[in-house]
Amino acid sequence: MNAITLLKNDHKAVEQLFKRFEKAGPRAVKTKQDIVERIVRELSIHAAIEEMVLYPAIREAAENGDIDKMVLESLEEHHIVKWVLWELERMSPDDERFDAKVTVLIENVRHHVAEEETELFPQVNQVYGRAQLADLGEAMENLKKTAPTHPHPRSPDEPPGNLVAGAGAALVDRALDVGRKLVRRAS
Image 1: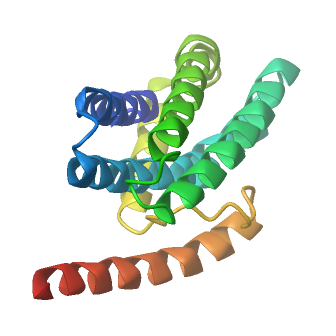
Image 2: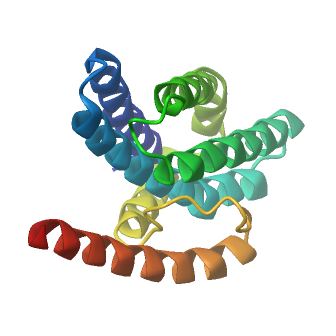
Image 3: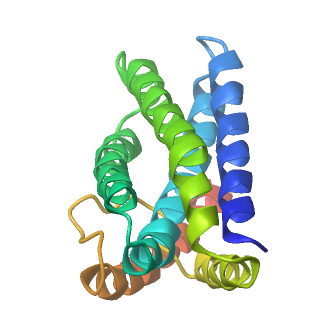
């Protein structure tokens, strides 16, 4: 799959989760918690594949300083989102600030997505041909299977540090995910 198509599909999936959260009523605490857990997972994987595959490839191939600036801004936006996700994972959905924090997350992600889709992706399409975008898409699709599923805001977000830290974080995350599923089934 084309890298841009893959990322836009991720954006749509997360937007659907955002809309579900926004439609959930004030008493839908369990529903909101479930939705936020899915948002955390989806955004953690999405950020990891962009940081491990797309952004380094763009920076290496692009001779355009504007693209480099966009990637650096995107990395900073990811950093902020990861901190908010990290905080949300540690909050109870009935905390008085939970909904407000999710609202801020949604606003930040929507801003990031709009910039990527209107500014960065058109430039990426100019730098890469169809075959290269397909190769990047395949690499990102494969990485999704082993990417971290939780935010790690203190971890490096650029190679080579993010490749090493990401592999370790993914193993820990997936073990925690299995443990959490077992605990939920037992309760």
